[in-house]
Structure formats: structure tokens, C-alpha cells
Length: 131
Image 1 (tube, rainbow, N blue to C red):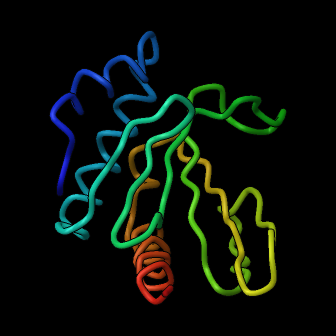
Image 2: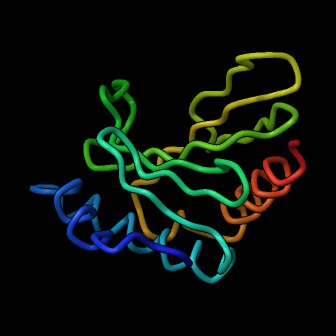
């Protein structure tokens, strides 16, 4: 994966004081790195963004957790051409026709599984198909 020079420092700063969330992110990052070796990642103020030709996934710390969400978690966000209804999808919205944004709460490393990676592969394909 293509990473900026200060990636490690930026990740540690982003997850400062949140060791559990950092561990969850690292588990996800290792899977993303294996699945998308040509992708790039960029740490921003409010999220970590993953790109091919276009943005295909984001990881963030929830700004506010819903009451049934775990206290220590990360939010994985991705776009698909249609709504996917799975119990693990916390929120799905259609910001414009033919683009559905999905949010998955990850609170255990076991949740970084084949199903989640499959959804992200779909998001990669969807983003790569854009003009």
C-alpha cells in the first residue's frame, strides 16, 4: 500500500489515548494492505481515507455513539451502488441516486472478517468504475 512519509506518526496522533481503537484499526489495515496492495491511505483530521483511483473506504472514530454501540469502536464507511442489508451495517444512506453509503461498527478484531473485506472489495470495484 502507498503510504505518506509521516503515516505512522499521523496514525499514532489520530488514535492518541485510544489504544483499543488503534488495535482495531491495525487489524483492519493489515487486511486492507493484503487485499488492496495498490491502494493508498491518507490520515486526515476526522478520518483515515483509502484510495484507488478514487476514495473507496474510510475509517473514523464515531463522533457520537448511538446508545447501543460499544464505547470502544471504529467506524468503517464505504460506498456501493445499492443498499446492502446486513445486521452489521449500522447505517445506510443514499446521498444521491445510485450511491449508497454504508457504516459498519467494528468493536472486535474478529469483526474484520471475510464479509467485511468482501464489502470493501465491492466498494473498491464501485469506485474504480467511476469516470
